[in-house]
Image (cartoon, rainbow, N blue to C red; front, side):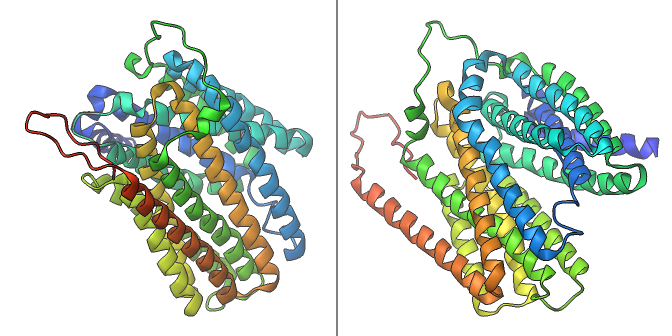
Length: 435
């Protein structure tokens, strides 16, 4: 086992450090983010179970609605507070990332005690704090990506490589955490996550120094909150398309789960059906990261719109021909579009937004996408009360179709309004890339 582990480690290191990623620090960042995702999977699995499974369906709906509303709180906090704080400390991003990891390790220790004694009064605030710190880490990681980008790798490819290793690590860790939770208990899984986060904090401090931005020569005032939303038409268009995809993602999770629980999705046993849908969603996420790593010469803006169009088409097909297998296809394509669209959006933000407000912008993006996911989950929860599969998918197809038409119309107006500049014989400057 030790020899096999060393071989796997060497093979993984060759992949993460390929194309100059080891020289710039991207390889270390990939490994750190993969370990961070593994810790998140440990927390999720150890706390899962009591919210949905094992409860009567009607009671579970109330618990899930409360969970969705509570989930919005930490992500609305990210935009107005965490992003500006990270922008102020952009010269010490390594230490900010390490701080979020150390703090989550300590919170895991506290949550383990709460699980042992059944203290939900302290468990919920700790879980919310873990969510906020996890998003703060993701915002910091996205902000430092341009500083560790090798010359031979595009932003979309680098983001995809990080996401691919994070998904693989999270999937393997979730399976391991499920077995450990059944064997030794959820509290010991949380204590294992604590040790993992503390080690990750040490690794974060040892990232290359160039991931920290140099201190500005002149002290500039912090931008006001209105500048967070002045992201330009290209970024705004990508954010809106990703928000529509996230609405569908949240809708699918809860609408399909309650269809299975109410036995309105026949074909297989409920446990097998849920496992099949989960496997399709996981496979779609991996496919999205893999395709993004290959999409080197394509515009991220066109990728975002293409993912929304693909999601709309498959949802329309499922609304007309609703079966178990079309539901699985929608789960697969929806996860694929969510992963690929988010990676393209990250690349657009990293390219278009100045470094002085980069973390704040990513905070706004994370908050918007999470609120969209919660909104879609609430739609799925309400429709599951009275709508069957075809009706629910018809509603979502209409929402996606209107969103796509609105974005395409806005893009057409924007491109028509842009002046066409013809370079003269002595003009050597390249034309702007308007996508």
